[in-house]
Image 1 (cartoon, rainbow, N blue to C red):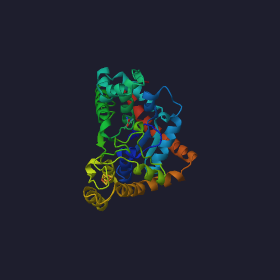
Image 2: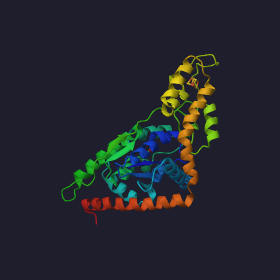
Image 3: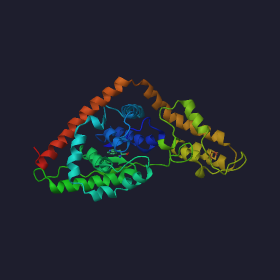
Image 4: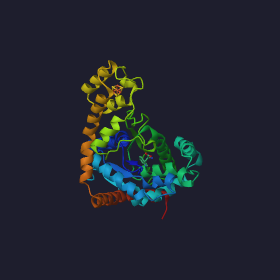
Length: 326
Ligand code: TRP
Ligand code: SF4
């Protein structure tokens, strides 16, 4: 079980940091996977303007499917379409000590960073309770996430333990403690050399047409030591070098190291090779995206949400019974 906030069209960073790994887990055939779009989570910070939310949910769904998530093999759904995502947080909230919530690292960090938003809300403090509920509703064993989400899964385990201590069903625990499946996250720089992020405006989108990808690569920053063509550079100090490490073959990598350090190749040529490697990954994704129609994607989400509801209700029956709620 894993989820993503609906940030609009996804970029390469989202793909490498999450989506590609989800597809791999799905394709391994070893897991019964649930992947969802966390639109209620979006409200915890973006409650003041909801005008783009529905559109962003649909864009993310397009990218999920284009990247290879398959509704025949995985349950793909929208959080707010499954009512149990509103019920469990209420019950878990009753047993969530304020101190636990205030101690989650992202709580203070985001309050300090997003100074243009008032995050002193009940909803924002409750973010980890919402996330714990997402996971526990499916009695998930594994949660594939990046390191930034690890503390949230840890809190999920603590809340499950606390719940199981208070309430039992036929002397048995209802909520299993999930484990993190840490996503290996290689450094993925954006076009300005900083971490690729929508808020920096330095992204390469999964849906960018090939000429756009090539243009973005051309304007990408390089090793600052290579001022002139004859100056040698170092791919380990260059954002384009970092892209090569993620996407290029060992043969290309060898040419990049050799050619850059000896100033045998120019940055334009090197960036062309990086663009070739990127385009090889992105073209099939963009082509699959172009085949999809709005109503088809909406029907997939509707069916996924129906299946998720069945599974979540199974857990809620146990939760209510354990809590002796009518
Ligand atoms: N908080 C996660 C993020 O910002 C998204 C998320 C919400 C999630 N609920 C989840 C991830 C449940 C895994 C499991 O990326
Ligand atoms: Fe970066 Fe390639 Fe230029 Fe070297 S040759 S500085 S790796 S873009």
